[in-house]
Length: 114
Image (cartoon, rainbow, N blue to C red; front, side, top):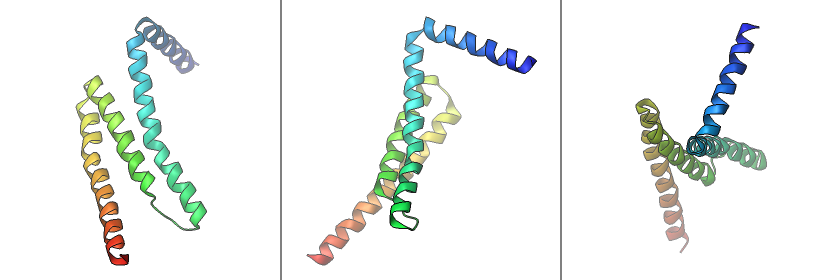
């Protein structure tokens, strides 16, 4: 029971802090938005795989990875958390590279059919 009381007390203090500092609430919402954007890439991948009847990696997966990672990186920089910053910055290179490879492959296919 002590855990539940402590949790509700901490939640109440957090809510008071957020309402006292609306700018913090906006940044927190921005961070949650980035997390939701990043997480939605898996929902997109799942839906597309179900539609195709096999595991696929749609290009939207990489766009949502890039956008969600970028928003989350901005939030991590704002809160000045080095492990969070590093964990978000490095994968952005991979997401960008994967988009480049997708477009390079599509361009090669267009050249072959032309």
